[in-house]
Image 1 (cartoon, rainbow, N blue to C red):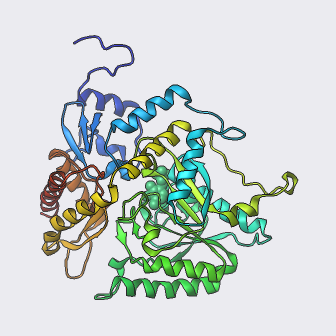
Image 2 (image 1 turned 135 degrees about the horizontal axis):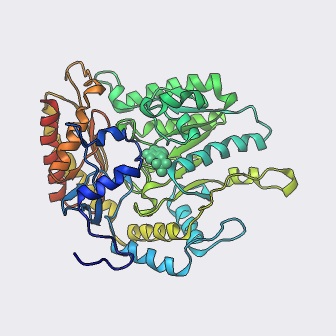
Length: 464
Ligand SMILES: *Cc1c(COP(=O)(O)O)cnc(C)c1O
């Protein structure tokens, strides 16, 4: 073997890299015991050395179609040449600079562009460096807005059942996915939970719009009781992703906007997963023609290249903090890497791709193809629901189709789909019993066919 040049990765296969990884690295969202080499049900630790479009290539040269956009971040393919060139160019000019008292062109241009493309009224941009941090910023800013207005008794938040807003303590507090929240509950603020408008949880035969209307009625009752102590209602517009890709009707967002105005509480739209074209429109809120008071963005913001997030808010919110220094009204929140120039530059290039190419139009055709290919699964004896919003599709597996009794979580049926996928060249990572598809926008119809074929065979293996 040749001696690698300095800085170039050494040539090593899957087995040796995985063994070295497992000696020291602790992975997120993982019971590390699953990777124990002695286990029959062993989950492989896969070293990826290269990405190419929608594909990931491991150290043994095996290829996996990234059906989940690497945790919903990737939009335009791995190692996208256009994004890589922008990143390299920026790295040679300015990699980072303190963002208090200093600024730079990538952040300025990105703020201008985000204000231009988001719903009207959002004119102020606060940067942070990941999705959870953006949620922390929005929660603190909403509370602090009311405090600065002399309404410091507003200290609570309303969140939807089944919601997920991240895993730092504040973001986790307003989340309702037991897997992530239950253990840490003693450390968390207690949110007021409003029933999710999730169509799957509706009454048999109830239309998505009817579920939304009924849930708005229930939200109104909560607001009548709690608005005086509530800062904001926080929601994931249209799709509750980590909660199992549960989907709901846009009417709920329109009604939520009206209720927030009526009861003087903020509307926080967490578009971290659904923003940037995922649901068919650039932002999910557009489908209800609403503008929230806060919009949180991350994940696709950089095309899946670097960690960056942004919170957009209104002139009204901004003005509540704007005062002579000694009034003590300034917003206090800072991360060392706030507004990182590399991340901002890559985000600008991502948004430029949206301007230069007919992305949403192409996605419509891809989404239609995906939906058509998944439709036959509706008849499967262990599938209770096949649902789709734009470039997110999900298949709900159940033990019993009629009663919709789920498989017991301990059986880990979804994990069987995951393992089947890896053996057959596809990265599918079911959320419990929900097998979902959230591919990068650069997939073609043949690649969608591959994902659906592998998933279908994986489902057969999982329910056997
Ligand atoms: C992923 C996600 C977050 C958290 O973002 P991180 O960057 O993982 O901290 C918050 N909200 C939603 C809706 C998400 O999907």
